[in-house]
Length: 153
Ligand code: ADP
Image (tube, rainbow, N blue to C red; front, side, top):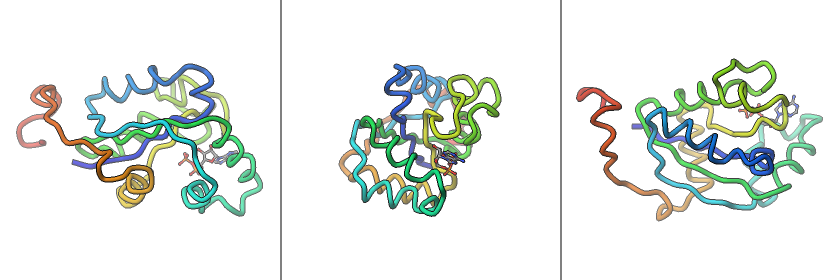
């Protein structure tokens, strides 16, 4: 099973979309194994968005991501990284497919309601960045009997 990181961003917090977003991952069959509200410190943003630090929009993204706390979630499932990215949709929300989170709930490049890890390697780093070991939980999800076949689990 893979683990991946989702951040519910400040626009979603302001617009009351936490439940809507979370229920989409739940309905898909993913397993929530960690969740917390947190303020993003400067150092975490610089590390998390290091690939954007020279972009003209970086200052705006930083201000946006610090405008309210965010909700960090860790989701688990078979090929969960790709599954979550598909549910989230592409960065430019107004071009995202209907049915995806960004396609259904957002119009903006910057204010695109969620972050999701973009590869398995990134996911492993990002889960560690946002969660201590004791904040990730292992438990049996009885629903798995119906979500996966025996050989997929
Ligand atoms: P993603 O979040 O889809 O993985 P990136 O890692 O490229 O995309 O960008 C991180 C975040 O920075 C985006 O989710 C978005 O909030 C913001 N961003 C990216 N590109 C732009 C842009 N051209 N203009 C404004 N904000 C942007």
